[in-house]
Image 1 (cartoon, rainbow, N blue to C red):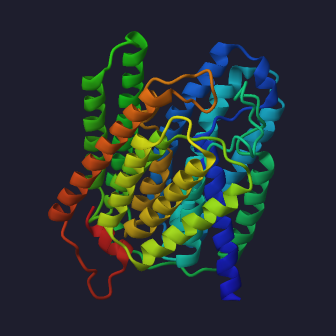
Image 2 (image 1 turned 90 degrees about the vertical axis):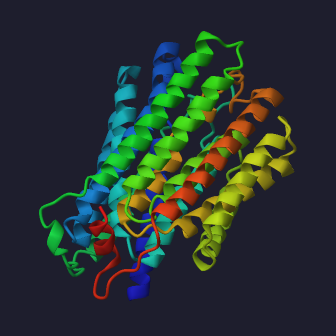
Length: 435
């Protein structure tokens, strides 16, 4: 019975992570938005990276808050609340006759996704099966996040879609969360560390704010530079943006306990490499294959963890983005997608943060914007494609971020020597003691 229960929780964690990722990655749109004004649609599109940044901060804050209760039921109940509220938000959106509330609904969707993501991350900590489902759901959707074919997004109108995430998928997650919440209601209360009975560790929340807000600000700043002077190379500005990204990752990593900041460095480098490779539409059947490759990468990372190999794989992705042709063959696209899925899974298995909010920050950071998105491209196509010049620039930028992340990892390992938990002290207790 215990194995069956763990399997149910694993499936629940997977679907919960998937709908949270969709909500952070894509705007909440409906078919009738095709008749909206370009200004409203542009406002909705611009709210996506800001909503993702808010969602990341909320996710870490919820994870920190839920863990202080030391009751599994609290975490599952919070995740269930986030999913139900998201379902209500989508039901309300179906009955809105104007696009005026779209941006507000998208921000609300991101906040609720953060609640779901943070609570689930706290609920599945120190449970290998559900934690693997949570990681595969988060990293897996990051790999195939465009969903252009699956959601029937028209090439001539990327906003003419159903709602994202689809309400049927949210409803499935709600049902699964109800089952898991009822199943975990009788789980014993975990031991409460004596030093944090009333204290709330704030450094993980501060780390999420530094990482999310700095990356968001530098991305929007770089985009404005190109808008004001589109025919200038902006090499200095790009260099400043790369440095700011690495510094933000370093500040966040140093605020986390022990070597938990490893996941932050890997996430920042992985996002840049994925953005540089691009997001060509993939058929719906490829999702199962990419999820399987992500799971294989996760298993390899758990069995053979190596931060050096992880950052080497990310660097390889950046080099692939640098040398790939702008209109590559479908087999090249498939190879790039498989490599990205394998790398994402391996990074998840390798990072293995000891404090649950650190893991939530690393996984949710996959949905933060990257300065690659601010680089100029041809917006007449969907997904954007700017030709060889844009591809080479994006590849070089991703490679610079990967190299900066590698240097940061070396510094982190020197500054934070590996520590072992004291006898009788749990992993979370040791991590909290470092904060």
